[in-house]
Amino acid sequence: MKIFLILFSAILGFNFHVIYAQSISIGPNTNEKLTIKAGGSLRFKGMLLSPSIDFTLVQNNISHSSILSHIHSSAISSSYSLENLSLPFSGHIKFFYKDLAVKDVLEANLKLVCYSVTNWITPTQTESNTLLNFIEAKLLNLPISEITLTAPPLIEEESEEESEEGEESEGGVKTDIDGDGYLNENDAFPLDETEWLDTDVDGIGNNSDTDDDGDGQLDTDEITCGSDPLLASSISLDTDGDTIPDCVDTDDDNDGVIDTADVFPLDPAEWTDTDADGIGNNADTDDDNDGFTDSDELACDSDPLDRFNKPADQDNDLIPDCVDTDRDGDGYLNSEDVFPDDADEWIDTDGDGLGDNFEVDDDNDGYLDTNDAFPLDPNEWADTDNDGIGDNADPDDNNDGFEDDKIFVSGALTPDSSSLESTWKVINIERYPNTRVTVYNKNGQEVFSALAYRNDWRGTFKNTSNLLPAASYYYVVDPNNGEKAITGWLYITY
Image 1 (cartoon, rainbow, N blue to C red):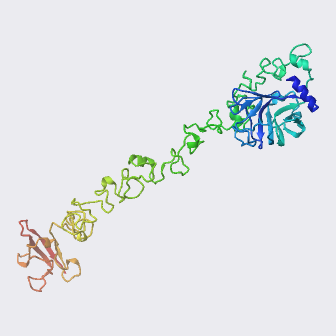
Image 2 (tube, rainbow, N blue to C red):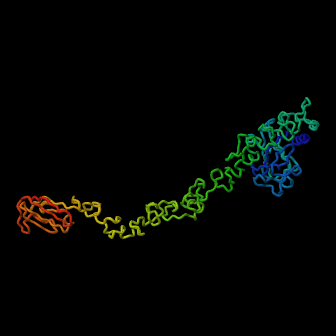
Image 3 (tube, rainbow, N blue to C red):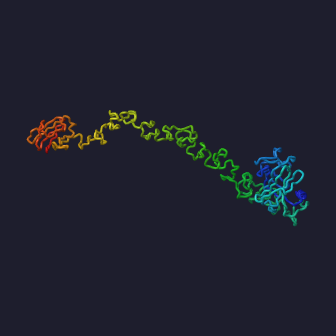
C-alpha cells in the first residue's frame, strides 16, 4: 500500500494520502450512485467501498453484466463497467465522503485522481463541494481503470521500509495498528482493519452498521430516498412511522394494502374508492354513487359497490322501498295507507276494496259523493243549515234555534204586522203531518181549526177574513201520533 502511494505521489509530483469515500457515482448524470455487492468490498488504491447488493468484483475492477454500454440510467441497480479498458467513457465520476473521514485534511484540498490506461489524469480537473461533501471529475472520451480520492497529508511521509513494517511513531508505537489507513487516534476501531468510524457511537462500525446515524432508517434506504445516512436529523419521509421511508416502503400508510393497490397510499383509513369521487369507501356513504346510501343497500340486499345493482324504489325518492316509511310517496305512511303501493289511493272508507279516490260512494250510504255533504260518513249525507253538523246528528237542522224533534207553539200573534208573529207559528209542525190545531176563545167557542197546519193563520174567525178581537185564546195542538196534545194561551194584539 505505502509503496504504491510513494510511487503514485512521485508520478504526480505532489504529496497526498487516501481519503475513504462513502459512495461513488459513475455515469453521465451526477445523481447516479455506484455501490458494491453484499458480502464483498472493494479498494481502489486504499479506498474501501461499503458493500451493498448491486455489483460484482473482477480483478479489482467494478463489473456489470453488460460491458458494451458505458452510459446507464440513474437506477440503483445499474452501473458503468470499468473492466474493458479499450472503451472510452464520457460523463461524471463523483465521490461522496463523510466529514469524519477527512478531519485530518482540508476539504478544499481534496482531489479525485483517475487513471486512464497509460497515465494519471491531473487532479486539477476535479471539483469539490465541501458543503455537500462530494468530489467530482468530468471526463470526455477517456477509458478509466482506477480511481483514487486524495489530499495533501497533514502528517509527515514515511519511508517504504516503515510502510512495510507498519506505520510507527517516534516512540515505536504504531500510529495505524490495523493498517486501515486511519491513525489510531482517529480510528474508532484501531484494532479492526475493516472498521474505523462509528457515527452513531453504538459500538458497531459504519461498514457493518446498517444504520450509521442511528435514526432508525437503513443507510441504503436513506441513500435511495435522498436523506443523509450520516446525519440523524436528516430523515426521509416515513408516513406510517415504521422506519421504512416512503420511497422504498411498499405500504406507506401501513393500512395493510400495498401502495400500488391503494388509492390513498398515504391515508391509513382509506384504500379504495369504488366510484372514483375522491372520497374513500370508508368515509363515502354511497360507494357506487348510485344515489342510494350503502347502509340502505345492505339493508335491502342490493350491492353497494355496483351502481347497476339497485334496490326497488317505486316513488324514486332514493329511499329504497324496504326502508321507506311511505314507499308510494303519496304522503301517507305505509302503516296508515290502505293502499301503500298505490300513489293514487290511501283510504277505503267503506272497506269494499276500492279506494275513495276511485269510488263514487265512498261511505256506501246510498248517496253519490257529489251529492253527499258527508261523503266519508255513512250516517250523514245532508246538512240543511250548513253548520257542519249532519242533519242526522244535528238537533236543529234548519238552525232556527229550536230542536227539530219537538213542537214549539208561539204564544203571540200580531196580524197585519211585518214581524215573524204576523202569522201564528207552530215550530216543527211540518214534521208531524197529521197534527190538528184548534183555537178557542175564552168562552170555549172554536174560532180556528186546521189539519196539517202550515203556519199561515192570521187571526181570522174560522175560514172568513174577519179578524178576531185582541184577546187571549186557548189552543190545542194534537200530533195525532199517540203523543200528548200541546195546549196553551195565544195572545192576539194589534
